[in-house]
Amino acid sequence: MKLWLRLSSLALVVSGQYIIESSSFGQGESLAQSEWIADFEFRATGPDRGGGNLQLWYIKEGRPQMETPSIYTIGAFDGLALVIDMYGGKGGGVRGFMNDGSTDYKSHHPVDSLAFGHCDFSYRNLGRPSKVQVKQLADSFEVIVDGRRCFWSDKIKLPSGYYFGVSAASADTPDSFEIYKFVTSTAPGVTREIPRHDHPSQQQPPPASNPGGQANDQGSQYASSNAQFAVQFTDLQNRLQALSQSLDNVFREVQQLSAKSDARHQDLSHKVTSNDQINSMSQKIQSIESTLQSYQGQFSSIHGVLKDSHSTLNEGLTQQMTHSE
Image 1 (cartoon, rainbow, N blue to C red):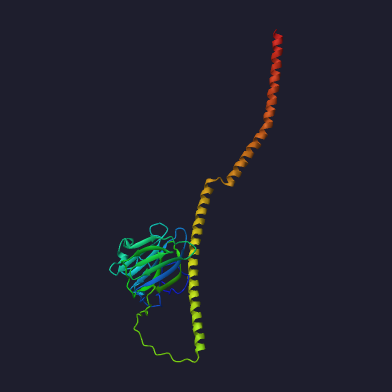
Image 2: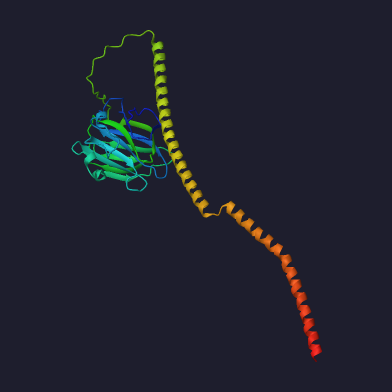
């Protein structure tokens, strides 16, 4: 699934396999400066074992080259890719990849060995946006994360005329990436150049005088209001989609726990004696007690007879012994 959007919208949620592209000076324009600074702010949230990766691209062909959202599935791109993910199992990191179009990343194994720079960067579940800054100056290239240097080189010089873009790829348990800011600016002391367009430039006629300037201003304000509303609506739609996916994950986990609980209950039911069996045993014991009580009177009668017989026998023997003497 792909989604192309401009990065002028704030808090843009990226929780699936989305591709988002924009340039620094307007949609469809390349970066004309040879020295520039790109400021990028995002926030990543997700469960304990969540995953996914976020890529910041600076590539030659722009959208046509971005057929897939991940550094692991793209082909032979020309430019720079900055990858933010959980590679290495150290809580996250930032890695830099470069290609001149000669290496097909999709068929190269392992892709991770192609990184030219990296640093550890714990970016998940911080509760605040993380800041990434990319600097291309006349004599150096530098990546800074949350105010500290990630990696630096004086041998890298990226060409002008390339396009910026952002993409995110999800894992089985996806993280949610929220993009808050993407701004490019010229380096200090560099004059800003006119951005290059992909289509041939056409000479525009000089604007005619407009006595109804106030009406045009109102129309411009109305159009700006509509654009802001569209951005907010897109942001809300993406947030709802991410929330719906999270609820689906919770529902599946609840179902799994319920199934385990039912299986455990059935197992215990087979091991524990039922109430009917206990009642049956109690009735049998009561019946035995009643039978013993009924025989108790008979035993008393037999005991009395035996006692009388014993007394009579003793008297008879005593009298017989007396007569014999």
